[in-house]
Length: 260
Image 1 (spheres, one colour):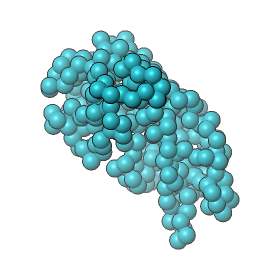
Image 2 (cartoon, helix red, strand yellow; image 1 turned 45 degrees about the vertical axis):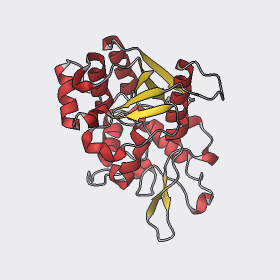
Image 3 (cartoon, one colour; image 1 turned 60 degrees about the vertical axis):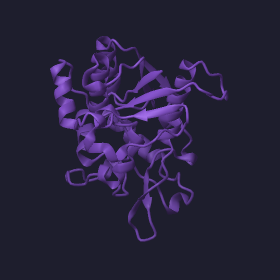
């Protein structure tokens, strides 16, 4: 079985095109799978439907539930909190595994005809993952033995700007960033755009930011925040585009599963 891990962003959309058309040596996937946290911005879900209308490869959506409804006392996202010296530090991230990888792997096992907890034996799946050459440092091996991660864009030497050309040549609209509306890796440009042009999504992020405030083990002594400035999201000065949270720990961001 060959499947494409679809994020509905630039790289995975370009990969879907290559896979559907057999370009640059990319194998054709049997299915493309989108792992839905149920907290993506509206434009991501709209783009999934655009791709479904275009793609000869069937697109499936799987989910482990709504991420924002996970208990705040067991925070899944890598929110920011203060270190002893007052600097910002990221909390442990569990959202990628629990809300992206696990539901995707569960669906792959179903495609392989495996029952719950059944050993895979000689049944294998090949994952096509949309990481481009300029993000090759994000490549990682699969966590499970029955899935082989492959990176056709890297193998073909394709960078993000070439991905944009591939999408444009196909006549598809350009995808926007795919990630949860409250992802702590958003930079100031993203937060500002969300605030000014997508107030409904921004209000969701602001509300979630308030809900997680006392969700660290230290509670009120070391509160959690979505922004590395360690102030409430609706009070952050977003005028400085240099404040790029993605650079805080982007090498490990979502392990190629979010925002691709």
